Amino acid sequence: MTIEWVGVDADDTLWHNESYFTDSSALFAELAIPYLAHADDPERAAHDLLIATERRNIPMFGYGIKGATLSMIEAALEVSGLTIAPADIYRLVERAKTMMGHPVEFLDGAVEALDALASFRLILITKGDVMDQRRKVELSEISPRFDAVEILHEKDADTYLAVLGRHGISPESFVMIGNSLRSDVLPVLDLGAAAIHVPYTSTWALETAVEPTGHPRFRLAHHISHTPELVRTLDTTPKGADPDDHRTD
Amino acid sequence: MTIEWVGVDADDTLWHNESYFTDSSALFAELAIPYLAHADDPERAAHDLLIATERRNIPMFGYGIKGATLSMIEAALEVSGLTIAPADIYRLVERAKTMMGHPVEFLDGAVEALDALASFRLILITKGDVMDQRRKVELSEISPRFDAVEILHEKDADTYLAVLGRHGISPESFVMIGNSLRSDVLPVLDLGAAAIHVPYTSTWALETAVEPTGHPRFRLAHHISHTPELVRTLDTTPKGADPDDHRTD
Image (tube, rainbow over all chains, first blue to last red; front, side, top):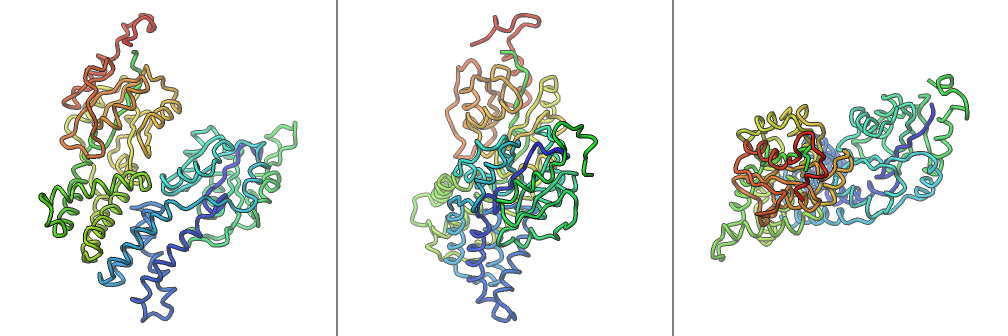
């Protein structure tokens, strides 16, 4: 491969996100647990109920804060048999607004990693609530470091293919860096491009998948600061050589 | 002007949309009116309360069904002093799901107007919930008629400028057709492009504006079927002539 373009995920790769959702899930659990007292593990049952509701609703509502909040409200109403206090529903609405205003906190080493990748063309590829993603891109003042910013409704082989097409990027010249195996790694490998997984401290249940250990175009980074070096291990064309003779696969 | 590109709005220009939101607003009014009995006109008060809540929340939540539903839930909780029945909140959540699945119903003459405009390059430019807009674009099977489809989070001079830039369109060669003066007409005229207003039977209160009557690059169409003819009245360059000598402004 001759790497020319590096794609970078944003939520939980460049800046914290899941930790805010974890706070919201904790609020949901607090409201739902009184109705789950019969369960062996009420906290686990609250978590499972929310994940099941989100999984059911994502094809309709998509990713992001608003859809997640509507799923929490729905699940709270259902688990309580429509007896939950309106004040508790109000807390979920208020929580959505807090989420929509949460600060952008870069992960340690993220900005330095972008500096070290500046010799490549960079494209930010994120998914979720468009308003929220745009807000964070603006607040982070990170756009000037990127050649392009793409906010997708879903990250799968089709949407990546469309992004690569829009920017005239061939899969053999592209590597994606991100925290989600399901969204940042597997669909990209399927297209013949490379991917570097940088796990975040916690992963949303709907983003989990099996690590493709041993795949020739896959790398695991234990920290974002290792990604520039790993990109260079994928970039196997010796300088000045004919790239066609030196493909790794 | 030499018109090369025609932009077309979707919601309430090509297919019905506001009528579905009107049904949702009616449900909200039904739930809110019991708490507004002291108002001179409770129905009007319910409408005003919802518009005020949406206006306040749009900078955070953006346009579309999910944000509108969260605003309805918030307003219902507030107007009732947190006493509204959980079952009523549940009706609002269920309504959001119905909205997310509503059929695409073309306005009379819309498809025929696109046929008559097929000699121009066509770009669909819509705003709102990305999931919902994509769903409707797919369901309508309308994409093959367009050179490009753009789903925006807001329609203002900046976002139009970005769209024109992405597709290499000069404002002097562009006309936008749509039902909203605020979103489809005024920002486009500001950029030096042309616009045709096709009013829908009802207009959301947040989209109202003053008709720019008499503006040389503005046309009013009483029906979408009149738009192809009006586009040609804007396209003032005689065939074979030097376009620079024949600008209307």
